[in-house]
Image 1 (tube, rainbow, N blue to C red):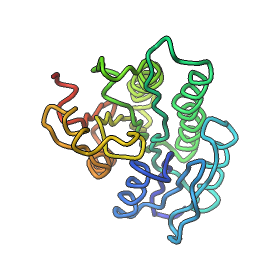
Image 2 (image 1 turned 60 degrees about the vertical axis):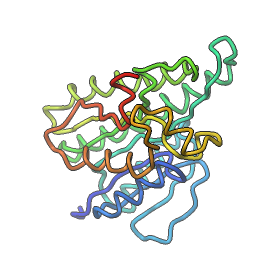
Image 3 (image 1 turned 90 degrees about the horizontal axis):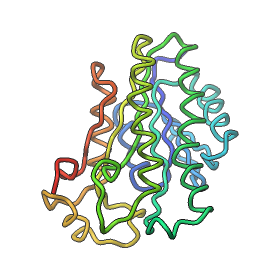
Image 4 (image 1 turned 180 degrees about the horizontal axis):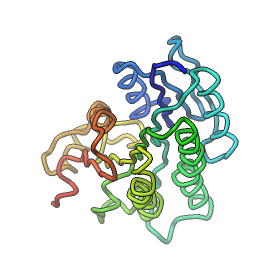
Length: 236
């Protein structure tokens, strides 16, 4: 087995996911990067695995590829997700299916396989779940029940998994972003996003990447929620 550490990152083709690929490469990790539309990388230590994370077969393919290319898995960042902002009574069955499939199904299928591999390797490893501060600090201007149902599920699972596997050396943490300047924001300007944070600062991809890398490099931290949200979780 190579000494080089290996991380799997979902939702890796743009925004926060693409920033995480870059951040992990800077600290020497090989990366297995997934999204539905991801393109091959010129970097020999970044392997792209295209596929819908809501499909269990995609999770199997990601893990198999990681082991075939790099021989091990050390970390997983469950970054893939969708955000559907609608009044509660306007959500459709398709909205529900998509949010559950991607936000929860993708986490479940892949994390289960990754933890099984970490145990097979003898224990140790790290899982980071990307949630949202809206789970804890709802905003009347941004109706987000499906985000709360799905990302709230990830939040609960973070603590549960952290305790279940703590004695085996597997850490599980979460990063809780505020309003970050990425394509998922649907055209909001950085200035508009800044006004949603108590400190009036625009959230960037780099802010989230720094948070994830902090957790990656903090061996005593598990079961933790790192809020990278300009103070949103503290109040308004």
